[in-house]
Image 1 (cartoon, one colour):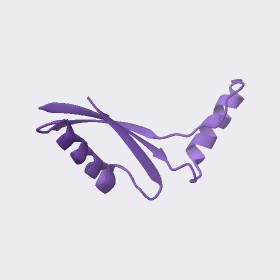
Image 2: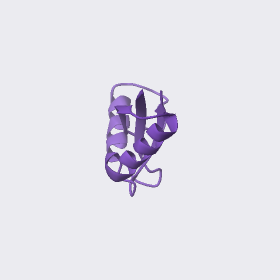
Image 3: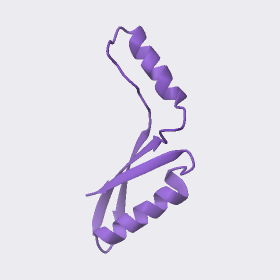
Image 4: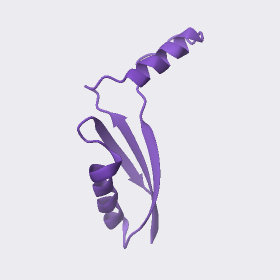
Length: 81
């Protein structure tokens, strides 16, 4: 079966996010009011062939741990559809 994994990778909350701070500063300079903390991450879509949803989840989790996310500085979550 073919599955699609929607993977979200974000900096860990305790890690400074200079890109998020710069983006927030830019929004404020453009006149956007009321903006709170902003953190920038990335989204990955991955198509995967697997026997079932459980096998797809296992494969995606390992791909995130080994390559897609730096688990020292980032956290990841995903949804299999």
